[in-house]
Amino acid sequence: MTQPIVQHFFDEPTNTFSYVVRDPDSQVCAILDSVLDFDYAAGRTDVRSADEIIQYILANDLTVEWILETHVHADHLSAAPYLHEKLGGNTGIGAKIIQVQEIFGKAFNAGTEFARDGSQFDRLFEEGDTFAIGNLEGRVLHTPGHTPACLTYVIGDAAFVGDTLFMPDYGTARCDFPGGDARVLYQSIQKVLALPPETRIFLCHDYKAPDRDEYQHMTTVAEQRRANVHVHDGVSEEQFVKMRTERDATLDMPRLILPSVQVNMRAGHMPPAENNGQVYLKVPVNLF
Image 1 (tube, one colour):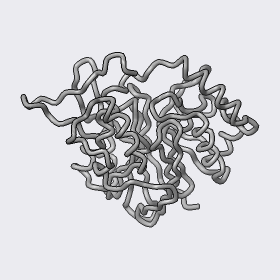
Image 2 (cartoon, one colour; image 1 turned 180 degrees about the vertical axis):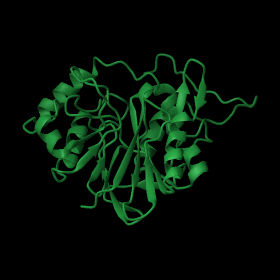
Image 3 (cartoon, rainbow, N blue to C red; image 1 turned 90 degrees about the vertical axis):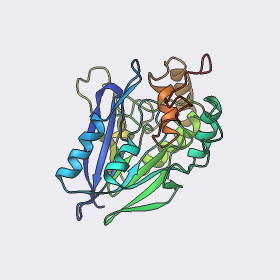
Image 4 (cartoon, rainbow, N blue to C red; image 1 turned 90 degrees about the horizontal axis):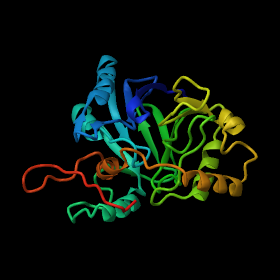
């Protein structure tokens, strides 16, 4: 398999890894899971994290073909519109974004100006779709469970799994958000673990498991099958569903879920300004 060049970027406040994936035989690249910095207390955004990616791309004279999301993130805001403005490229996400837009469009009482058809993105990917990054071919696995729209992008020997899997010592994604399903997540993970053992798995988050002092962003299919604390070889679907359901019941909501979902369901765009010219993000009381 072709081995793409992968550069990671880490946003510690949200524990998020973003990636630039480069074709080794050209100057073409894709950006995955970018971060827009957000001070929740002040309601203020910043582009420091996105500018790091831009600086890397400009320094290496790269051309951006894609700005991709693995899913509608609940823990950080996407910087896709800013990156698109500065670098070009087509935006992409899973076609089931429409389900997520329906769920959260209702939750946040978004008006009729909020299209629930995925049209905010340039490309809606289905299971088995392919796309090009220069001479590299990427292909799409639909891996729902954490959210209905979660994708894994398989690019050469690299798989970008979003929140579906974490490092083997930390486990797997939660499934208690609207549209999540632990049984579906188990089945999705089996798709990822069926990839060749040497496949590199690039993670969207790391939280440093107990007894580990450094953040890590990459593992392999073989390591996951051998050692993932939630879903290693031999763990049955029923065992996983029981564990995941019980664990999810103990978890707090992500700190930035309310602003993140409102923005990310719009492909990283803010809601429209109100009649005073000011943009607002809503806080539904006692809904989630």
